[in-house]
Length: 401
Image (cartoon, rainbow, N blue to C red; front, side):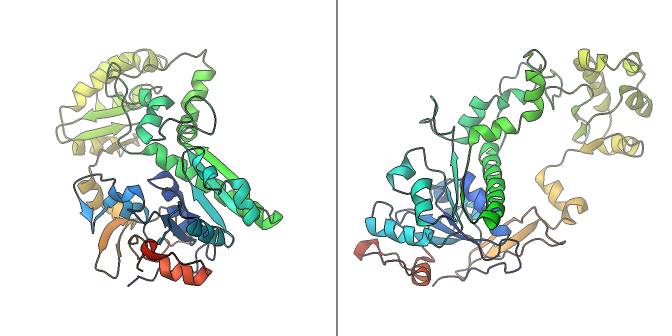
């Protein structure tokens, strides 16, 4: 028995059909954003196991045999199981593409062409189609056949050298930032292409890669490097939080936890804290860069002498930019977070319930209503085949609804 996917009829993209042929994170992240905004997402999966992300575990926890990651990124989507090695299923997919508004794929370069579903071929089927491609490193060049995996893309992007303290070596982000940035970038491109289609009546091919997204997110610091004689930034050796910014920018240990301190004049900070050891730097802003580690060392030793709550009681009233560093339990219990109403529980008719996040986008003051958990493999195959008059699979290829 299949669960009905409840459409967001008031969503900004209500009525649009997205055919999502992507796997893992980058493409599904893009289709998640479109779905949250009201688009209908039909996820194409292999009959023998489905999206590999179903088995890509972040921990030893699974939900009804699928990873928490799969559930997080595929809520409220429909699953259509198709064997792309089967000519009959390829024809069924082409029939679906003819009625779709958007297609998303993140195969390695060359794979989608071998399937006969390149942008050129797909646009012949449906000239209004907005077609989105995500790769690891683009379509040409020496890295084109390398695995388009997030950690490896981070390694090649230069991003890792912005994290951590000087002498620590490269430090990767603690999440798949390249995948999600690429997904967000291609979602922006899809939305722009849909706007142009409403004017011209024709579709477009939107492309990005993990590497391009990771380079783009460094635009601020790369622009500095390119216009500063190609001088590399030097990370702070003490509590580094930004490779370029001067003292006191960083995260400091206190008696009860950690305190983040952002941009603020050293003189003002010294006055509020009564820290006379910083007086020598107060009227010399250049020294906040040239003597960054010395200043931060003095501040670190001083802040370690009392609790985070004590320092906040002094710094907040003085409008010093600072914050307590929260772990998830503290974040979830904080009224500042709870006011945002960012959590939800999505459910399926078979009893599966998943606690997860909600869309970060509010429209007219409201978050999109989404209540259904990620689909079982091939759960909507029969219904989608009937609705779009797709040819039926034969024999052992058939997937029960």
